Image (tube, rainbow, N blue to C red; front, top):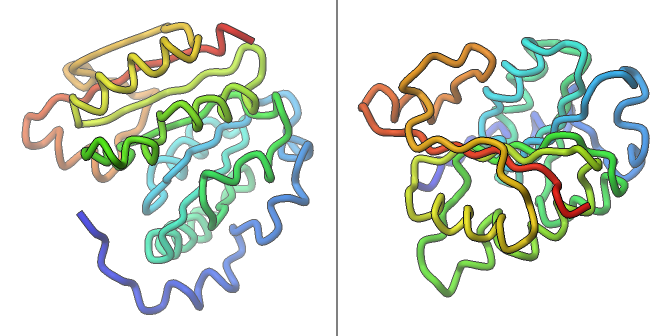
Length: 212
């Protein structure tokens, strides 16, 4: 579903306090304010609700959220600014450029929440769990780093499970109905809440950087 255009998003992004305008300058320094915590990276954060909730829940960790859609990024930036959390920031850009913003081994957890499934085979390479993306994640993750994926799309979940295994990642957890139990440690996204309220299952898996 295409997101409606937010007229004020571009102007808001141009002055947002939570946006990192030159993420390349942060390479190797993302955790300098909280060196004992973990660096979480959400790719495709949408309106930003998940990263904002996680940053509040885990104040000892650092959270960077990436979003390439201007309207969604504008909404996320506003949410982050209102939350005023020192451990949370936004990158308005394309996830394909991650290696320009983070050094190898710098990221501890990558979150893939309800990514675009790109259902047609000709678009498979655009999925955030396609081989090229997984290679990039492997390089960016720390030796004990993790990828946490959630989706409502069973076809994407099946594709991704095989892709993770083929790329050498090791499965730690898997669920085909994650929200059948309460998980206070993992806030619901706005998108996720909609599907849970409709009684639809949420697919979730956790992978570690096993081949590093």
